[in-house]
Every structure is written in structure tokens, then in C-alpha cells.
Length: 329
Image 1: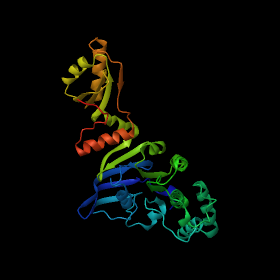
Image 2: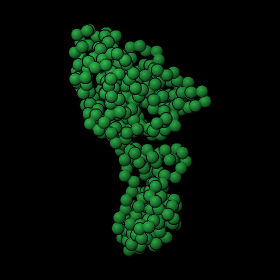
Image 3: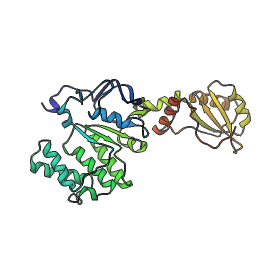
Image 4: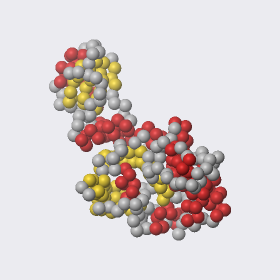
């Protein structure tokens, strides 16, 4: 049965998925169903990204719950492994073997004919910029070259789903751009992708669908637009420049959606911590139009995924999401 003959499958189906390392939580009670597509799994180091990828690839066994990848249990399905291309976060430590030899051997083990494996290996090494160094032993490569070699082996057998754990590690700026372009083209071709990273601005170039993970829990998932709308319900810092700063501060102090009002060294500036920014903006517009205050400038949080992630982590920790602006009360 070819991939085109299979009934439509979800990319991932997670039900009550948990994994414990003794008393340490790896991932905790994850519930998620995703159709085929390109996704980014975002989280800081230790958030649970690599653990979740280990579960998705069958390298780890869940403590509780269930997981299907492309309709199959990754722990019980040998054929599924042929449909996956995996680039782990661990360094590539292969001694005495060239990139050409290594990838050809992997393809041969996957059932490719020798001449096809040689041709395909050259093609993928050229795609990642290693064609000229293909006959050098891998252990002589720089970290960035080893990272590109891992990407090459992950895509060599033309998998349906590419799973990458921190693929930008060790790459210089040019290498990062080239890798982003390769993954953008992969996603545009209609193939599925899961990209785990903490490099937020780079993954935003590749996909518009995100899962945010922290402390082994899924904080949020959705498109960039859907996640940004969560900002309306999360505490944010807003800087207001006003020549009537004291009058404005008095008006704001009465509002239940204002958590804090800070004055810094600038005589016309207030730094506000706000629960519902939309109400702040509406109130400022009303007060200014009625001549109660003057408002010269409003600067809110930048609204990108990095900001959202910081705010979601703050809420998860029970902290106030206040940026370090150097303000004093």
C-alpha cells in the first residue's frame, strides 16, 4: 500500500500521555490531535520537547496514556519507522566513516538498491551543502557540518513525516538561513514536519502552527494568529507617554484590570501592568477624546510568539508577567 492509498490519518493523536523518569515528570497528561501538516514544538531547554519526540519516534515508552503517529503506535510498528525521518538533538558521533558511506549504508538497510542509494545520497548532501565534503570522515566535521549531515540522513529516504529536534544547533547564520529555506520548501511540498526548537523567530518563518510546551505540559497550541489572541487574556506591560501623567495614573488606579502603575525617570511616562489590554486602549481613547488626559504614545508588547510564550510561562508559574524596564513605583 502506498502513502496515497492509505485512508486519511491524523499526524499525531495523544491521549492522557505521560512519562515519568522515576519521580521526575517528563511530559504530563498531554491531549492533542493534529492533522497532517507542519508544526513547531516550542519550549526552553528541559521543557519536555526531547521527551515528547522520543515518545513520538518510539524510542521511549509512555508511563500512562496512548500515542499514535500516522495512525500507528510507534512502539509496535516497524513499517512506521520507514515513514519517519528523524534528526535527534544529540551530536553525531560516527568515527572512521564518511557522510557518503554512512547515508548510503542507511539507505541500503532501508531496502534501496546500491546505485539508487549512491545517487540519492549525493543529492541530499548537496541540498545541505556537504557535497564537496561528502568523502571526509564525519568525525572531522565541525559541529555545524555534523548537524547538516544529520538533516541529510533524515530526509534521504523521502519520509512522510520529518521530526527535527533543535536542528539549528551549531549552525552559523548562513547555515541557519539555508536550513530554514530547506524546511520551508519541505513544508510547501505538502509533507509533514514537526520542528522542536527554542529559536522562535526562525520557526515562525517555517510554519504558522505552534505547540508551546513547558514543564512537561502543553501550554497552548494553534496558529500564530490564534495564539496571539490569547494575549488579550494575559497580563501585559504597556508603556503610555502622557503629558498628564499624574491625572492618568489616578484614573487608572481605580480600574480592576490594572495590576500596577509604575513611574520611571521619564517625566511623561507610565509603565502599566494590565490584565485586559483591550479595555485599557478603549479607556485611553475615551479619556483623550473627552479631554481628560493627553496620550502621546502607547507601546504594547510586541505580540510575537516569543512574547506570548513568556506570558504563558509566567501564568503557568503564577508569576506576574512584568518586563524588566527599570521602572520604579
